[in-house]
Length: 279
Image (tube, rainbow, N blue to C red; front, top):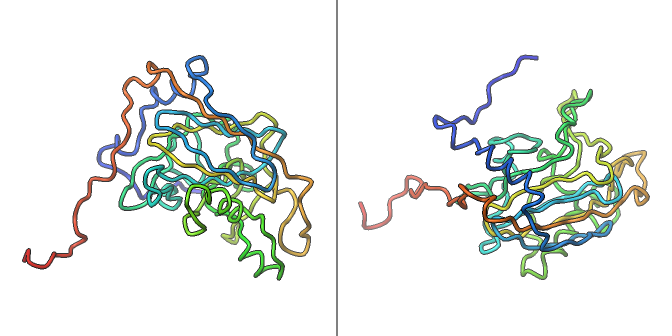
C-alpha cells in the first residue's frame, strides 16, 4: 500500500515537533521525581483528579489487561478540553511517546505530551490494530439502550459523569476520550473494530502535564474487551474487568530546564466579521 502524505504539515516544523531530548529526559527521570499521589480505580468505576503543570501522570495496568477511557480539561477553564479529532490529525489516530493531546478551539495548545508507554513496541498487528486509541469514543448507556433495549449505568460515559460531579462538571462536559491500552482499527469494510487489550500486569502509559489539568479515567466495563458487549455473542464481561492504578509525580527542577508551559492559540481575528461601528 502506498503511503499518502499527511494533510497537516507546517512550514515551521517546530510547530508540530517536540524537543525529544527534553521529553526523553522527563520520561527517564525515575530518580528525579517524587510521588505526590497514588490511587486505584476499581472495576467499572471512574475517578477525577488534578495534575499541576510540570508534573507527570502514569496509568498502570495493576492486575492485567484493562482498557481505560481518559478525559482531560484545563483545571482553571474546563471549556478547554482534549480535542480527539484534531489530535488525530496533528498527531496520529493511535498515540505514543512524543505525541501530544491537543485542546479544542479557540485554545488549540498541547495539554499533555506522552513521555512513557510500555506498549510502544506493539506496532501494527496482522489486522491493522494499534494501541492507545483516538478513533473511537467512550461506551455510553444511550447506545447500549438502542442496541440492547436494556439500561446499564456503568458505561464509561456514566463513570466519567459520576467522577467529575464533585468538580462541578456534568454529563455535558464529558468528551471524546483517549482509550488507554485499547487496541483498535478499521476493518476491510472501513468499520471500527476493538481487539482484546494486549496490556499485561505492570504495563503503563505516562504523560507530562503542559498546563494545570483536571483528568478523569473510567475503568471500562468491557474490561479487556475479550468478550463482546453487543451482538449475538454478547454477554456480561465482568470476569475480564480489572482495576487501574494512577500515579502523579513531581519532577526535580533540573529535569524541566528549557520547558515552558504553552500559550493558547495566537489567532485573535473575528472570523471575517466586522463589529458594528468599526466599518
